[in-house]
Image (cartoon, rainbow, N blue to C red; front, side, top):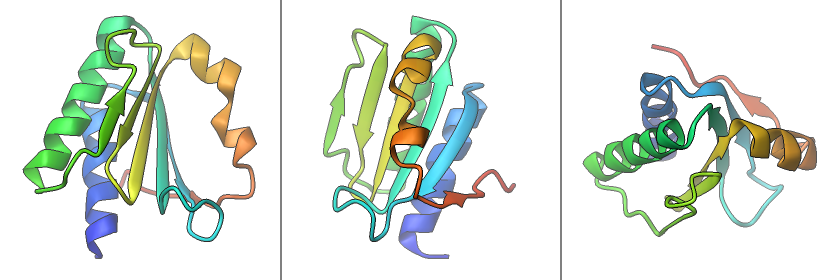
Length: 116
């Protein structure tokens, strides 16, 4: 397993541990120069969105990964966590439906990440 795949697995597990819903990972290699993977998930309240984002950040740091940027944490409507090769989008449920990133990046293959 590559370092990117380990990070991808760790952040999706972290989101799952905080009961994030509809966790989706997209392989952005060759599609977006921003990152190799996007992880998209949502929570049902501001507090849950923040808990998911905090857990993702902590798990990435435990792996020795640098958080390049984390935006939107205080508002808790769309938290973007840039970990370099992996970018995690933690939405509040209503914003996820509105922005619909899965449709925007529809040509990106889905990655099965929630293996134990």
